[in-house]
Picture (tube, rainbow, N blue to C red):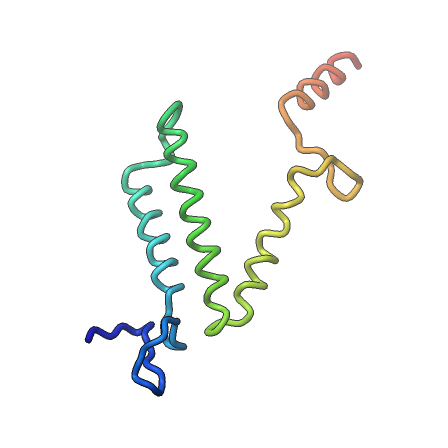
Length: 123
């Protein structure tokens, strides 16, 4: 009978499915994400523009982020503070869709820079 690291026999000799404590799936997920990012860098993904290439680029980025996030969440048995660190690292990115406030000034877009330049010329 084939035995994998995730297969544990019970007292009756029948096995039950489940991941044993030493089964480190997160290492494979993070490794796959790093390998995908390396392949994307090798194929110069940063220069892909337009149409299908833009969709592929975003799909690769999404897969890398999802693999790293799921790997970090699964690794709580080995690294208990890693999921919390992941949330704290991503939390500032949640402020981008919020409207400007005194705590978060507006992002200087080209439109506002044009307005400033026009106001300086008017003076």
